[in-house]
Amino acid sequence: MRHLGLALLLTVTLGALLPARARGQAPRGALVILGGEPGGDSINTRFVRLARAAGPGPVVILPMANADPAKDVLARTRIFQSLGVATIALDLTRESAGSDSVARILGQASGIWFTGGSQNRLAAALLGTAAHDSVRARYLAGAVVGGSSAGAMVMADSMFTGEERRPGGRRALTDSSTRQPFTTIDRDNVGIAPGFDLMRDAIIYPHFVRRQRHNRLISRVLERPDVVGVGIDETAAVVVLPGGEWEVIGESQVIVRVELCTG
Image 1 (cartoon, rainbow, N blue to C red):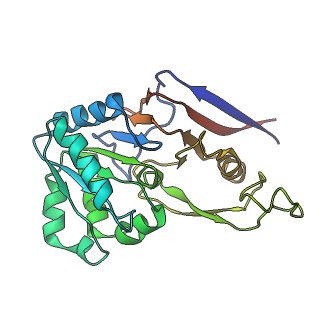
Image 2 (image 1 turned 90 degrees about the vertical axis):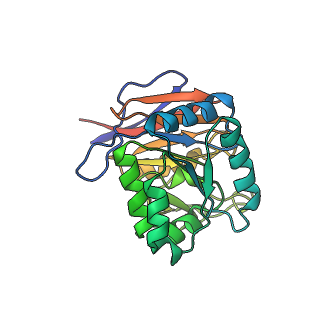
C-alpha cells in the first residue's frame, strides 16, 4: 500500500466530514472547539446561541486545566454574561467530580465550557468520573460543549499529552533540533492519552498555525490512518452540529489532515 498525506485548508462550511459520535447514541448537542483565546464575537455568540437553544440552564465553566484558574473564570464569565447567559464555575478535584451536587448542576446546564491550560491536568480531574459522565449525558441530550486550547484537545477520544518519546525521532540530534521539540515527523513519537470521547476517530491540536504544530499532527495521522487530524489555529473554531456537519468560524484557519491509502 502507498500512503498519501492530504492537507486541506478550510475556510468554508464543511459537510459531514466527520460525525461527532458518542457510544451507541447520536448526540443532540453541538461542539464549539476553539483553537485558542480570544474567541472573538462570532465564536462566542455562536456558543451562546447554541446554549440558549438547548434550554434555560446556565453555562457551566470548568477551569481545572489551569493551576490558577481565577483569571480564566473571570474572563469567560464576563464574556458569557455580557451575551445574556448565567454562568456557574466549578473548579473540581477528582474527588468532588464524583459528588451528587456537581452532577445535579451539570445536569441542568445548557452549555459547558472547558478553559485552557494543561489537558493532562483537566483529564486527571475529570476523565472517568461521574462529572465526565454528566458532561457526556448533557451533550447527548442537546447541550453545547465548548472549550479552548487544552479544553479543545480533550474533546476527542484521544489527545496529545505534549510528550515526545524520541527527541529528534530516529535521526541523530543536531544543533538545530536540540533547541526545539518535535523537529521530525515520525510514527510512535508523540505521547497520546485518552480524551473525553465526545467525538470519535479524530485528534485535535489547538494554536496550530501560530505555534507550528504540524509535525505532531502529521506524525499521529501516519501511525493511525483511521484518525483525522484537526489543527485549529487561535481565533478560529470548529462547530460540530448534531447531524455531523462541521463549520469553521472565526478569523483564522483550520487544517484537516487525513492519511489516504491507494493501491
